[in-house]
Image (cartoon, rainbow, N blue to C red; front, side, top):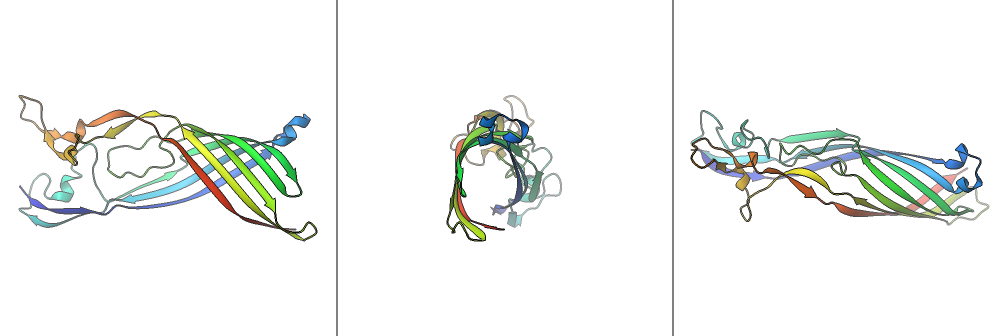
Length: 234
């Protein structure tokens, strides 16, 4: 019978580092055609920390058994999904990217190359047990994409250093997959936290326990564009 007020102030932090390896396929064969092709591997390591920052105040009639207040009610054992409980952390290698590319032109520092990418997930999907659970990578969606790269030299050919302008474009499309999601009733936000029961029974359970259903998730695609200056010294 307790009552009170609550606030949530979600905060997210992410850190990461990416290792990329590229090799010219001509190293593995004498076929002249292969001198234009390269094979690449991209391995990202990501750390994510989410904090929903659930706070309560003006609590009245605090309970003595079961959930004693708002914070405890949102993380009680009988609530199987969409719990709220402070910081949630995750780290790991969410996926690897395998790239196959070709250089159309490479002369005097001027380069044009294009490639295709396969995105292979390496971790499980996010568990819906907690609301605002940190997600690494693309939540176990397989994908494929294309890349286009330009490198234009800006410095003189006889200089002992090289300054160049680069432009890298990438577009990845992700395949749909079935994921578990906790849904609210239509036009009834927060209804997942209602208590429900079967007709004719007296035992109640949190609605989230039965509203965790498989849905078809279609991420579609994302594009990334990067540009900047490169400096090479001899």
